[in-house]
Each structure stands twice: as C-alpha cells, then as structure tokens.
Image (cartoon, rainbow, N blue to C red; front, side, top):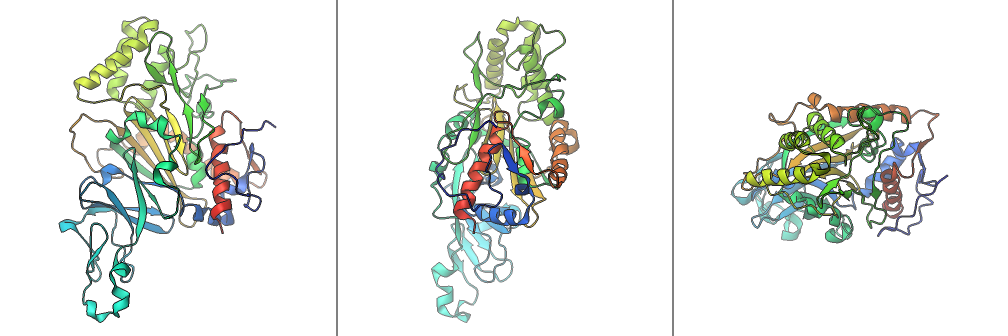
Length: 465
C-alpha cells in the first residue's frame, strides 16, 4: 500500500507501541478508535493538555461578560476583563463547588457572586468577600486558597482558546505554521451571523472528519459537483504536511491566468453539459454555480451580494475577464458598504483543521467554522457546533450570538449542511459492524484524516494513563 510521508511535529518521537488501537498502517485506521470505551477514556486525558476553541470573542464583548465552556465533565468560565483581555477559571465556587457561570451573561458591578452562599470575586478571579469568614479555620480561607482556579487563555482569530495544562506548549508557538494561512482572512473582524449546535449519535471524530475531505462531494453534494459521476476526482490542492502541532491545511490559493487576483480553489471539478471539457471552480461557469450553491444551501461561506455580483459579471464580460471584474466589483462593493475585506494573499488557505477540533472554510470575508466535542460519557455521541462568520460594516455593534437565535436560518433549510449531516450517524452505525475492521484511507484524497490521527497517537502516548 502507498505510504504517507511522516509528519514532523512538536509532539513527535513518543513511542506509540502501547497506544490502544494505534495507527500501524497509515492507510488503515482501526474502527475501534471511534467507539471503543477504553480508547475513549484514554482520549479524555488529551483534552486536558491541548489548546481548544472555547468561544467566539463576540460572546463576551464587554467587561464583565461571561460565558461557560464545557468539555467532557469539565466546565470553564470565561470572563472579559476591564482591559479587554479574557481570563478563564474553573467554574466552581471555592467554598463547596457551586458552578458560578451558567450559559452566558454579565457580572454586574465587577463582581462574580456565588448564588448559594454569596461568596464574591473580582473579574480577575481574586476573592473579594467570604461570608462569615471568621466561621472557617483560617488556613482554609487564605487568599490563595479562595481565589478562583485559572486555566490558560489565548486570543486569536476572534476566538478564545483555553488549556487546562499550565505547562502546555505556549499559545503562540502552538500555531506555528497554520497562522500564516489563517491570518490573512481577517477573522478578528468577523461577527457571528448564525450559530447552530447539534448532538449527533456519532463519535466526535466521525462528525469532524466529514469536513476533512472533498472525496464525498460527488455523491453527497451532487449540486456542487454539477452532477458529474464516474471517476470524478476533485483537485484538492496540496495539503501541508509539516505543521508542528497537527494542524493541516490546503494550500488553496491559486492565481488565475488573466489576473493577479487570488481565489480559493474548489472542492469540485464538475463537467457541464455545454462545456468542451471539465470545468473547475477556476472556470467562471463552475465558480458561479458553486458560489450560488454554497449560499443557497448553507447561508455562509459567501453572501448574497457576492452571488449577485457573480451572476451580473458572468453575463457582462467574456470568461477571460470574469475574475478580474468579479474581484474588482466585490472589493468595490464591500468598500462602499464600509466592509473591509482583507486583500488577497497567496498564503491564505480556504480549508484547514487545527488540532484537535477546529475546522473551517473561508473566502472573501466569509467563513463557515466547525467545532466537534466528545460527549462526556458516550463515545457514540458528540456535540457539534456550526458558526457562520462574516466581516460586517466597520462600526457595526456586536450582537452577542445565541445558539439558534430567532434570526438564524432554520436548521432544516440549510440543505447543503444537511447533506453532510445525513451521513454522520449512518457511519457511526456501520463502523461498529463486526465485519468493518478498518477505515480505508485514500492517501491524497483523505490526507487530513490520517495526518490528524497520527498526531492523536502521539498525544495518547504522551498523556494517556
């Protein structure tokens, strides 16, 4: 079988021989990794040592705002500070453990107050009041004993990240490699357009891997493939294979022949009935069809105005002038609306995953972002979040996002996402078949999947008990 190139990472070199159901053949992943309870229990320890996406910054825009992040059986309280930074705390009163944060809200007067016995803390976690303090043995209520227990926090790309391990890899070092392809998108300017959360009857890895490859496009998204069949082979681009922490991305920028503008390469290379040969997203007809499909079926990854511009331009100019005119109009239109889309950059990627569970697609100031988390006790369930992000006009007030808010599109209407979701639970059913011993991995088409599992084994070798 074809071998995949070894991936040098900062967590390379650990002996994985004792890892349960380890990846021995990089093109055959043991099925038990997705449902075995013992493997699931070993995985839990990994979450206590990795940088993970806890919330979008707009959930806590102002000083005193808080939100709760849950991972497995752990709860973290994230609080915006008066200087704009964010601190994270174990969500437990230092008295008898009452959860201090529930959902999202605001702490008034700069005080976190326990609802049970009234203990209080400043926003920075320092204790400011213990009710009837003299009733406790002095050494149990010393300042460092009653200050809130912190977790490490980092801010990047508009997201808040946390890590339970104080000795974990430094935050900025953790993103070495992937930051060069994500920084140019301007994520820090984006607001949440809508947010949906689902509990799938599937392992968290099954759910996130649905968004790791485009091999499924022909069958799952026939509209996106313009209904091409047979040996449809999507040009996936060159996936990076050298990130230090398990992050993988498509080197997705490609330069058009007639313009210096840069576009994001497609998942698909469909063939239309009126074409002399196959068209790709770099061909105007395929590009416009793809753009329209993504908007109609996901209400993300692009916006209605960009689709309108594309449809106007395809009718107005020859194909060899399409991209130059399309990008000019998109940028001019955005500027007229005071929307500052970052300039095109050959380094930016339109498809990535950051270990362990941050996946996204982005283009022209718009993004679809995914987060998969394990169920606290059941390896056959997970919690999955979908965010639509977009750069708004400068000066737009922040609206704190809510899961399935009233102005969010109905989940049932997001048919493009439904096409993916329909397969996730079915895969979890089938993968437990006694006859299904391995996930068979295509070395190029599904490279993100195997790269990710190799890094997981390194973490398991280092951290699992």
